[in-house]
Amino acid sequence: MTWLGQWREHRQPWQKRKWLALDIETNGLNPEQDGMLSLAWVPIYPPCIALDQSRYHLVHSDIALNQSAVVHRLSQEDIASGRPLREVIEAFIAAADGHYLVGHHLAFDWAVLQRALYLLGIKWRPAGRYCTLHAEKKRLERHSQGISQGALTLAASRERYGLDAFVGHHALQDAIACAELFLAQVYLSTGGKGVSARSVLNDGR
Image 1 (tube, rainbow, N blue to C red):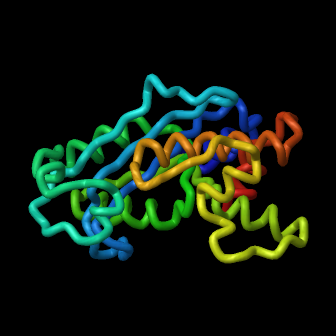
Image 2 (image 1 turned 30 degrees about the horizontal axis):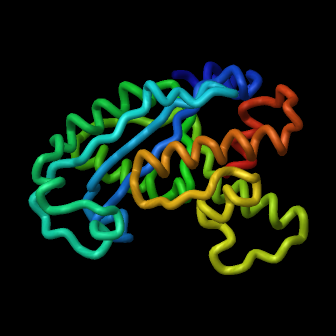
Image 3 (image 1 turned 90 degrees about the horizontal axis):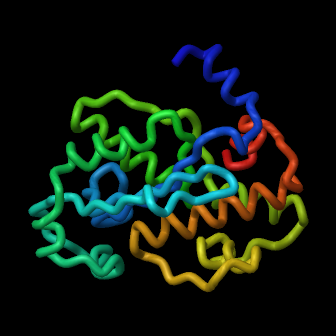
């Protein structure tokens, strides 16, 4: 897409654009070296979350799993039975093309995705990116609220909006929980008004 086409899309009301929440589980906390274990996503068409279009994929790997995999409740057998990385990434791109990506601590997921794209020799970029963690941090700072340790976790952020209690560490559950938080954040910050997609993206940057 040309920069002009992207500029026009960003000017449209945010409710008219397509969003997609994702979550990636890895075998560690270093996106530059730890392998992808699973990838999940769910499309968002404000005010709806398209649960029927959500997807969860395990990524095949022969690497030895560490403590991160235990947290995500994944076993060596789970990973061995997963799909090849290329198949998972190609399925994700087909679903995400033309959407704005949404994630909690999205910088991590995007770094993992970029590494996978590089390893596979695939060139792809989303229409835009929105991080619910960054948006929540900005909101708390605007209201001069102190940010205590743990205040910006997905569970803690959801609690401030009255969303259901949440226990994470499963990619699909995390993606859906992030999608719910995204809608709560944006509808509260905009008062339901049709602000531009660019304005919303700026809040989550």
